[in-house]
Amino acid sequence: MSLVGALSKAAKKTAPFYSAVDDALANLKRPKGTGAEFLTEVMKTKGVKKAEIADRKLEEAFKAKGKMTKEEAQQVLKDNPPPKLQEREYNEKMVREEEDIKEELAQEMYGRSYEDLSHRDRRPIFDETQRIMGEENGPQYGDYKTQGGENYREILLKLPTSRPSASNYSDPAKYDADMRAFNASGKADYQSSHWKQDPNVLAHMRVQDRTGPNGEKILHVEEIQSDWHQEGRKKGYKLLPDQTAPIDSEYRALVHKNADARAAGREPDSKDLERAKQLEEELIKSDSSNIPDAPFKKNWHELAMKRLLNYAADQGYDSIAITPGAEQASRYDLSKQISKVDYNKFNSGQNELTAWDKDGKKVFEKYGASQEEVADYIGKEAAEKLFATTPKDNHMGGERYSLIGEELQVGGEGMKGFYDQILPSYLNTFGKPYGAQVGQIGIRDPNAPSSAARYAIVRDADNNYRLQDTHTEQFALPEIYKSSAEAESAIDDKLNRSMKLHNFPITPEMRESIKQKGLPLYQQIGIPTAGAGAASQMPETMQEPVLEPEVKKADGGAINYNTAPDMSDGGRIIQGAPFKHGGKVNMTTNRDAMFMELSNKKLKRK
Image (cartoon, rainbow, N blue to C red):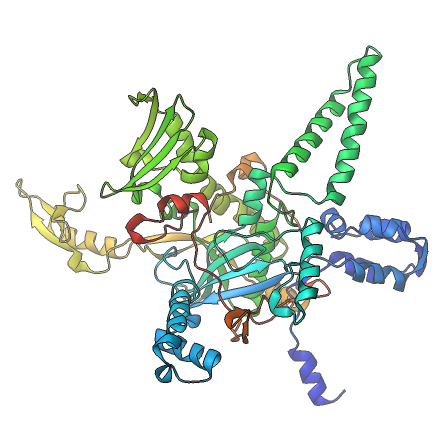
């Protein structure tokens, strides 16, 4: 091999994820056999997960085959690949000046400078520039991060869309035919309220860089979230006909079996009754849901965490830090934004949910909201707290439930369970072979005062030393100090107040292992049991170099940005170019609609 070839091979990056099923079959010594025999041996291999077999529909594919060679068995895997993940990153380098955007659009749309255009031609460019400035210009949720970090970015893990895109067609008839076929298939994209122009976002990670006390390079994880699976967990998933058919068949068989037992004077088996009830609920949920089915239902957080582990190992980070649950809960505290929430129940059934901001301005009014839907607007904990209050007569033939002021504060138990237990538990299990466990690292408290000038040392009426807040002219805390020196020491303590982050070290052995092989796509540790952060604690939150994309004109001159690049190769995600940003939107569907008028700013609540 030539030197150039050797260097090229050495420079090639290992894909972040690999398929344990593909590796297992590649390492089998069996040269021939039936499809069932190949599948049986693969499933016995350590590291192979049933979830991957199911998602790739390999059981059906292999059992439909008779005698085959190993090469033919590997072709079955190629014909049924793992989910092909795509990746997109929004970072602060993407933020552009308004004049630069106008000039770029003018050249793209008219081939001329913006200054040379007529007023009529400038109008669409101005409108498009305002849209980009408000919706596409860099990260969207930077207000919701811990202060003191650098290089804040938002990373999306996506599944590719199967919906035809008009920009990819030159023949309108072909596009119409493919769109009709798509609609008839029952397939659909998932659209998160956070990422309007990014369909099928499976999980997002909000991160920034931080320097540790000893100069460590730290990847600080502010948030990990899957809107898709949070909604699916609540509402169920819309299954395709080929998915519901076996469920329906099993359900009907159990119904007949239970009916036969009763006809014979026997009680049906309790397990059969429970199974039939479970299948019936699945079918009912599927029929009423509009959330498409998706892989990684139970371990999406592990998928996101593995991607960050790979990123940290590849980019030379010394550790991964995670914002703790208490800070997460404080970040999205409803009482910081809203002064009062009322829920009026009327005899007519047209119930009303209303909220007021800190200035007493009504910022939300929703008629017809059922009691069950209130949690979608104010969160589960706040809703439970609201309906635990004693209702009052609303003088309109009904009852009024209210939360006022500090009553709107909630404990954030879901946040704490996820960020303090579920994620650290996964990392501890992952790190055990490398001797790495989650610890803590201190950073300066973002809520600490920035300057000693914030406080004045004064003597109170009783001649005691106190600290007065110069912003509010109130005593900062009730403490009394024996001397001015003691008060000065207290100021130093306030200025240097720290917050603890969960911190997971990237050991040299771990780094080398990840860089050499990547991580198994379907490795699943799972959600801890109730004692250590159960599934019920999953929060309702909301987590490489950037290459500029090609910008195309399509559909009558409108600006149409390319869809996400496929970042997988045989099921493995490869490094690629994140690209243009989608619409700036609220952090949830209903609660953001509720508070979007607050301070003329969309409140990006989880």
